[in-house]
Image (cartoon, rainbow, N blue to C red; front, top):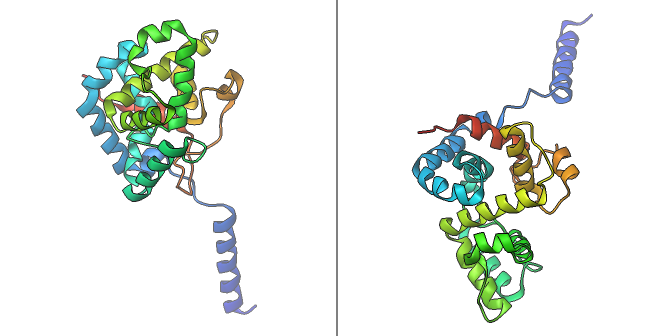
Amino acid sequence: MNISWIKLSVMVLCLLSAILCPAQERAYHERYDAECQLALSFWVSHEAEFKAIGSKAGVSARFLFALVAPEISQFGYLSDRAQTYILKVMYVQRGKAYADFSIGRFQMKPSFIERLEQCLRAESTLCTLFPEVLFTAESERAERAERIKRLESMEWQLVYLALFCRVVQQRFEHIVFADETEKLQFYANAYNVGFHLNASRLQQTQGAYFPHLSRQKYRYADISLWFYQNIQLD
């Protein structure tokens, strides 16, 4: 048999093998090592703020940070300011049906906050814990403008994160978690795909959807767990 033909056949087989059996995917913290290190540095710089809001959230500061750490690690990949400004104007003028987008290091959307507010108004104990969240604005448009202003503040995003934890705690108080890490992954799923979903949906969420703009996707809850296990504690 012709040697050149043998070489060509081997090359074709190698190429097909590479296509059909791609290299093993790297873990999130390996693929985004620099971004993860920046997120961990953010924890070191803001640990006091997470600790301050922890008691209000009913969870540890470490738990709180791990919930939003994946978003913090991707913060540098956000769209440009001009586009974000246009979306903010559209939301204030028309509402979430016309513009619903992520804001700030924790990547919270106006619709996420509005859903939290609905839960707050429906539960008196939450109103007692978070009276500052309730609006006194005279119109829905003024409320939307104030909501956007709040979301641009890390202090307010921490308050909303604490409220989120309390809402999840109340909605799923019947669930007994085996340990803190199982609880974290459930809460992380709720943060990523929606706390309004039912318990079975959140417990069964195995899809890889994060980061949104990346070809290779990861499970958000797995990333949260990695941060939980790797942050530096005082």
